[in-house]
Length: 403
Image 1 (cartoon, rainbow, N blue to C red):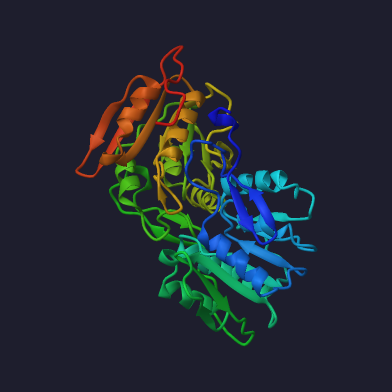
Image 2 (image 1 turned 30 degrees about the horizontal axis):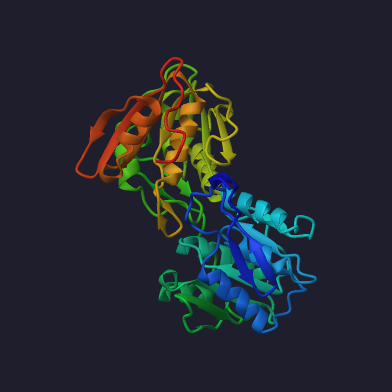
């Protein structure tokens, strides 16, 4: 058996074993598609005999482990709400692998209207406290006195502020004992509670030293990277952005709230800007930021939720702007950046450019040289670098594997 033929790792649940993978599936990836919080939650539901025949909603099920397991329960057809495109793709594949593709499980995004009734609400605590706040506010109207509400997360993910949100928005809250560094949250809905309005989305004004976006406002839905203020890496990139020419096709890859792509649009009114991110919240934010600042040119922007540049025709892009993430949930990894760089190389026309900002210690210049055969330092400060790589005529991407 070669490495690409290795079977998917198996999760043992109270209702049988499941073969689960992340997306895109990579047999070399040591990270599993579940953690101890998922197994603790499933064990609790089985041991307490929780009635799962009603309207079951699962939020933040990162790779579909909980949702896929629940489809093994007679009468359970969960609604799975996620912000992540790649997480939903993983869920679709895991459901299909488990033979549960036709069980009635329904996948919604965080931008979709939630169900109007929820009998069991299972919350995988997200990394973003803001996203948790937004989701609890959006789901609260569907809860009733008998709704079972259980949160789950690793101990390091659950803080006093986390519990306070459950208590302030839903009702009285307590936690379980820790098990394998995971913990459960139990909340009793209180219909008389007045949690106030949902504060998301919100906007803030940018500083005055970042080019075309100086002093302008950006719009942020909950959970978007640096939704409270501009991060210093993006700020550094904005101070050194290239100026697209003519009707160039520009991509804001991993667009977040769209500040980089909108800045490019203001610089080059005739350019077409593609905003793409795997987060539904991010793309909604980018669309709102663009609309607020470029209302006079609505036909020049495209907004796309997806796996980076996957599906974008090869050699069709002139400029890619990128501030890649180096975390996948709690794991530090360069896998996402490496994938973005490879996608950019494939999408760029000969002579097209990829501009990247990153922490100095990440060594992106080495990866760019490996892929593009070149990497130029555009700007640097004690913490960040802005790098430029050019797609050469007739060049093919080097390094087929993740480095």
